[in-house]
Image (cartoon, rainbow, N blue to C red; front, top):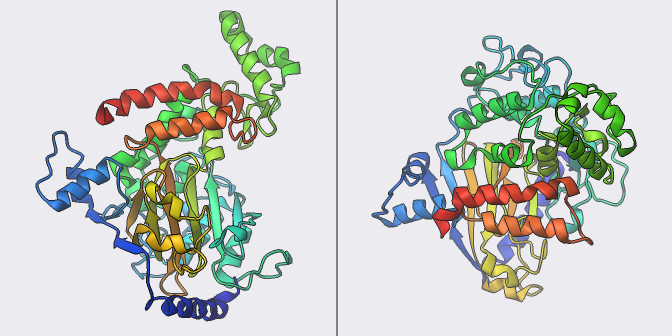
Length: 485
């Protein structure tokens, strides 16, 4: 917040604090390993035998044991560094999900020269506002570099973007100090919107042919998403929503129905009347659907099988969407220099990747065995620690590295991590992220999910979701079990 002038002043003050501690004792910070896409891909091959220390790093990265920075993996992403002009590309490219115009999944019409590499970061952010303007985001005018800062304002993206660029304007919430640097947009992306977001972040010259037409079935969205992932991501990071659809969705996918259909438990007869052909054909399926509707009706926000404004006759995409939303599986981050996230671990012990589309970001990561030294979530400012206040942190043995535009980051489950946007004040940090279940964490994620399904005092998961998660645990065991046994 506070605009560029306020940012520079506050950053200078923090730099003085950091410099004053450079000449005293410090905790251990190893450089984060860096791998090229070629090295990372080679280490994924069956029978890979490391022959050097660098090969050992690549093997550990593939196994999900270490954090690392991946270079050269974003050739198919939108390039904000070409400097060939400030092409808006919004209306010409078609309005996507949430912005009117193009329907979710409908082919994007790309005018020659309207979109593609060479536009600056703010142009891309403005384009996101045009396409996804009515999507609700968490806007932090005061930043979120400390746990006490976590007081988001729920705003439409199109309203938050001007505030991010020009500094909080007319902000009236006196519970936070919006004058400090670090304003941040945290956008948790829904499952149905995620393919459209990947399209918006990709090089349109390479992805304009990825389309399945207007999405009328969950299967259509899934095919489109898998096509984008195959183009944009290394193979080990793909397929996250695919496993959700496989183990959480119905065995036989059904289409969506009219929004007026009532799925409340008191009106299950009406719901079945709207699907009389199916009901007559399979009485048992009727009973299962009615039971699930009864269960769903007990939870606020999930009655009637409504998701993203659409009512579904079954749970093929309804249940996976609940998992995506509850866990914040897919996220877009946009913030000014000085912003970032306080030191924390992810709740469900998942791994994650993050792609740096614009700007620079400093990462600080500590392994799980360092937990006794961390003082809890947000307990230490890892970029300017006060060792007198947190003396145990002086013993911490961690990693630190800087990612720039075109770099990608991976970190394993249960690793403590904090971020700080750095670099030129006028260049925003823009990144895209997804959680991952992989061979290094799948049993830990299973335990975390089971906890959230059993802990009645801190229940995060919907009962219908919990009833289907055991399918996922079996799927993961079959996919990863042999690799870790």
